[in-house]
Length: 229
Image (cartoon, rainbow, N blue to C red; front, top):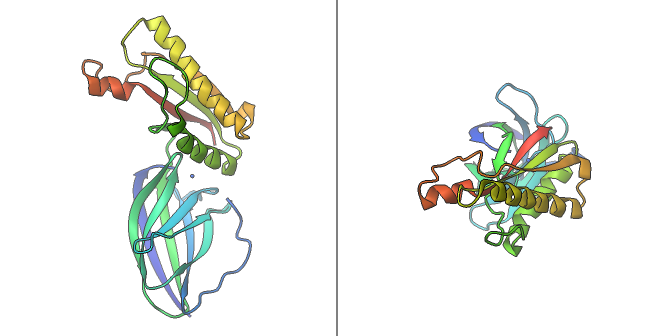
């Protein structure tokens, strides 16, 4: 059996369980990837979602790390894969790796990442001036539900933010209502109430200049803060 090592040092700001249930073996058509995911200090990162997307067929092989940050997965040989990592509501593409047509090949894959503590939920939308979630928000929120179910000890705060248009007290109220709606959605999908809080910050925490439309758009956001991993 051939064995090779691939080091994938991923300098990213991103984040995302299951134990290794059985011993996998490579074949002439399937290569074995044996990996470990750590942060840059060498701490193993359990309950992370790693994906290998075949560049040609677009087929995706998904695997979760165990409590020690390890994973094993079989992927078809003679292909190039885009390695992706679940970043709360977004599948982030980090690097590519080629898996040649070697018979019974086994590869060691070392992945280093730096999971975020705060994350903007870019694909969460509301009706203008209201706290009603738009249906095109559901996919992103369902992805977040998936992460929170896997990371079942994580406690988060959903944060609502606005631009500076309108009265400050009204913006604060709207931001609180929007954060509350996201919290209610997560709870309705099975996330425990005590793991999700909601807080509106109104216009008090801008991340861009409110002097132009582009800046205002960035400031109207819903974000997530990790309180406890």
